[in-house]
Image 1 (cartoon, rainbow, N blue to C red):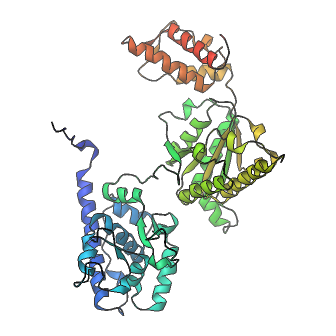
Image 2 (image 1 turned 45 degrees about the vertical axis):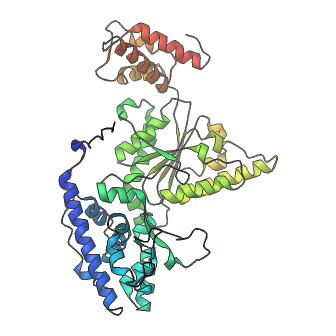
Length: 456
């Protein structure tokens, strides 16, 4: 029996945008094909950058990317050239295959190669340089420098990779143009480009449905969080006015007991600023092998370069513990790891947040290198009362006789209270009601206390 293949949800697909986007990319492909034929006819003609297609459509993924980064005609050729193998590999293949051989390329100056199937031509850096500059050596040198400084390369939208990983060929022109998988997906479907979780980027996108009113912290803590938001909004203008004499990093330290709001604060910053927040999986960063932790950190920061993401190192005690006294070689390497991390944070173009339960684990020399150090305290009775009032999700509600003032007497963090409310709502749901019972709350509070070896 054949399984039924579900159809995509039409409500989640804007067919009109997809159709227009395909039309935009189609015109870009025809433009590339014209330049390719022109270059095959003559290696001496200048790059015709003045006949680039108009992009009047504001909402298509391809047009949005081009407009967002103000891509030049040369950069647009670079982009479409890297996309072709994914959507229309035959365009290159049909024009470039040597008629006498299935393995050879008709014009060796174009670089590139046929993949293992011998059906797809994969462009290399040489391909795009030849399309742009032909045989003009100075033009090829210019475009080589120009493309290496392009935002497409800086943000790793396009990267270069060795055709043969085992090869010792260091000639960059022989390296294949590689459009990152998330941007392939974005340019085809419009899905927002996000990194693929893995060894090179061991991080998870985190978000929240809560809002600032539900983060109950002291006034000074909220003021410090607003400073971080100001940096994200105004930092680039500040750096520009200061003639780049200030760096663009903003390293933060969040410290305080578990459940006091550190993670929620990071999520709310991302939500209010329209910035993705990535929680780093430290288990994939820290390694017992010497030098491996630095290597993993390097991959992480390289992948986050120029992305305007918030990098959130939660429960960072294992990596950032205080280890200033060197007793053996392991302590020496631990200090080197911390120094390397702080170096990369200071070089990173954007916001990084380290969260720890104990500030004592961070020595003073390290603390001075953070732009913002914010304490998240355990909530007092007044703050706990606000948490009980604001964290109950609609449409659930407390039974009328529940004493919220009395609940506020229990010394619980925001995280504890969320756990209690979630457990009580579950019991209400099992009874097919939206009223939360006092007995369910009491049972849940006992469980929270028992987790910490406390008793009500």
